Image 1: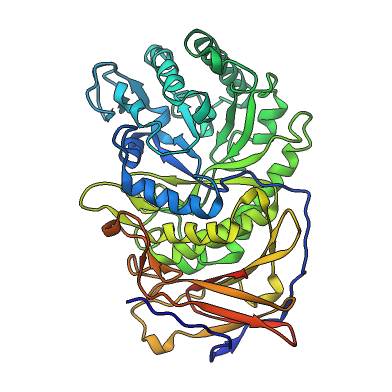
Image 2 (image 1 turned 120 degrees about the vertical axis):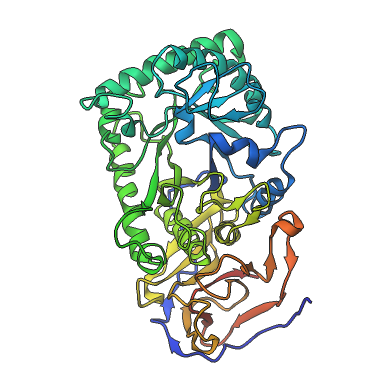
Length: 508
């Protein structure tokens, strides 16, 4: 049943956070983010399941994506690639979109057929990036490139194209598909030869895409700023001498599934950990911007998520990770130099925002983190984000202000209380904190990201709504309360947030 109430006073609380934080009424920056800041990356092998086909789309996925688009003004960009991109061998006789074995190459561990490309166009009003196989540097790899370039360019076409990609995390080829002494110089030469071949195939099959405006790539798509192939060295070795790199892409994961000492509180629900991870990218992006010709090339995270290796159940797929997603998006956006994020999706992976098909089809908690972030961000190309460290007093909390980039006016606030509370604890032990902000006289709508505990995989809501498979991802009111806070007189805005909960405030 839907409930409605107006709240004009603060709640009873157990403790006050630091503050009050002085929030500038206006803020301007010379950094502009790309549209669709919250975008996605799909493992190539699972993309047809997430998308369906153009003639028969996966409506559950479409609805979930359109929910995000409603707030950020654009459908999330769809980057299709990942590890399986560099394992994919094309087999024209394959009757399914993908397979783990095929006759085209007995050694292949991932195959794609003609129907794979029917999935492009399944998501309406979406721009795509397709990743070509670089790792298989042999006869079947070359024949795959020659066969898939025409299929991909015709399926995507000029109107749906975001960019292309050649190779995924090439630094991880070393010692596996390339010799131990394979370095940045070798990689650059190989990448340039491969993209030259792709251009020649475009000229033959899709000449409308063989133009300076349309023939472009995200690169180098290495696994991290500290990868064995260093991004700065790659570009200093001339990777973009042809000026075809549209986006500098470097991947990021907080840590690995099997890394020692990984916990929900210390690894993910931890603002200091998130800041440290993001700062590695900020430093790399700033170094790259000093290289002639790269000053205006946007730096993105073309693939990122919580724990590499698909995430871990009990960490990546629980509600605590939704709070991490929200904190991660806002912190990354606040840097101004990380222009877009692509959260990775893979069939059955714990870190996926949803499972798209079968008996396990479900909306995972991290989806709600992305939705809350979209509400805060709005149109990312019109958003400035400012961290508010003075509003909190521990690394398990964070706060942000959001500004309209056109006017500089304050119109969003976010508070994320990541102190871990689990559903196994008594409800009356869930402590709350009151956060105080010095703002102009104003009225604010409050929408809360909440769940019974950081450890749960179900029962998550944002703004009182659920977006589950039972409704094919469409919003369903669970407990709908209209919460409004008014700031008068002393100009102190007070908002109470329980442990393991977040609040997004929108200025009315």
